Amino acid sequence: MISGVLLDLAGVLYDGETPIPGGSEAIARLRQTGLPLRFVSNTTRNRKQNILGQLARLGLPVRGDELFTPAQAARNWLGKNHRSAHLLVHPDLAADFLAADENAAGKVVIVGDAGEAFTYFALNEAFRLLVEGADLLALAPNRTFRDADGKLSLDAGAFVTALEFASQKQAVVLGKPSPAFFQLALDSMNCAAAEAVMVGDDAETDVAGALQAGCAHALLVRTGKYRPGDEGRYSPAPTATVDDIAAAVDWIIAARS
Amino acid sequence: MISGVLLDLAGVLYDGETPIPGGSEAIARLRQTGLPLRFVSNTTRNRKQNILGQLARLGLPVRGDELFTPAQAARNWLGKNHRSAHLLVHPDLAADFLAADENAAGKVVIVGDAGEAFTYFALNEAFRLLVEGADLLALAPNRTFRDADGKLSLDAGAFVTALEFASQKQAVVLGKPSPAFFQLALDSMNCAAAEAVMVGDDAETDVAGALQAGCAHALLVRTGKYRPGDEGRYSPAPTATVDDIAAAVDWIIAARS
Figure 1 (cartoon, helix red, strand yellow):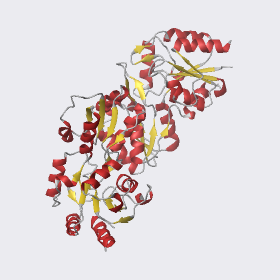
Figure 2 (figure 1 turned 45 degrees about the vertical axis):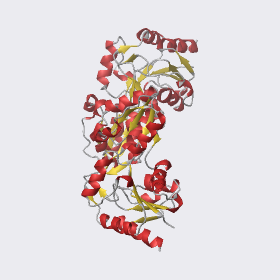
Figure 3 (figure 1 turned 90 degrees about the vertical axis):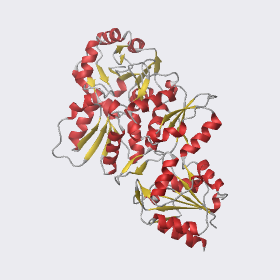
Figure 4 (figure 1 turned 30 degrees about the horizontal axis):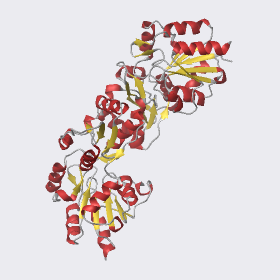
């Protein structure tokens, strides 16, 4: 039984500004089934508003309450834990973090995919705060993403790992594969993990992550950052590996009937 | 029995351009014993000639044949393995690698402490070569070093780890704690590892590294990057932990009598 669908964005529906063929039709077909959908993205280069705008431009209208990003999870974390945030994130994302916590007890270094803002100076500044006692939050632990030029590029996880190695502290991960992140999206559609299916191009954070978080099924698409052999690289392995989002929707519709 | 002494430089004899008090007198006393000395440094921000010049300015004259650096080990490696080198190193070190190998069969990414040259662009360029099949050489795997301002800073190892994590390749380490690197210095003074003592401020690469390479003794000094508790953090533990280079020389002289 499938009662809800979780979908990754980058690498599943688009690469950079290029839509993946068949994506918008596939989402339309999925919406026609009446199944609730949630989009769970580890993209941290853009504010949520910008991601929604980009989806609309690509013919993929998504409501704000259907999209879950690690920055939201970070704001929730900060609200609960009362720390002042030192941001090592993309300038386009920083505006999402403007409100300072006046009751802050200590600092936390928050790392997203900062892109060109990953300078030695910025990384070293963050490292020194960790040495002085700050906590480390990773918006996303992804190794790579498929860049606008079609090649793989370094994602936030590489820089999180660098900071972990040097400081010998372990990051708290907020985005996928954090079970709490999947659960946030599932709860918002009143869907039990055991009745959910996840679709993603990252065999590690999307697929193994969702299955470890209790999702019934996780489909790996051969688009985006997918490289041959990925389906065998992480555990648990995908429920199925399919060509693209269109094939994933075929699989979901067939599984329901 | 002690027949030879290996010494680290940064954090033992100086921090940046500041000499560690008592260093030059301690080295003079050590030379008076007649024991052969070798300096094994993982510093990769400077060419060997510049390090020798810096030592002379600090009143620590060292002969070229007494100093071993990872760049030398890298040149040896390139000579044996015939690869063309893609350098992710400090601009001051690049000149040590000018000669291109006309028989190169494939590429190798060589990572040193590039400092401000660790930009996202440079790291991503190196990562993409790794994805395309290049090997990864780490001049040094150190987590941190004591910077000129007295604080810890990110060392090359953090960036090596970032590239390893994203590419899922393992780096070949050329400097300490590579047993081959220690052996190169030991061989040059005809000293068996079982009769050697190492002195360093890095409990991991200097101390545990030397002991794992077979050195009889390894002394940890409480200067440089040392932080309380370091003596218990890595295995094998130091033979002894002493205040500074002067106390280390006291220990060596006492151990011989």
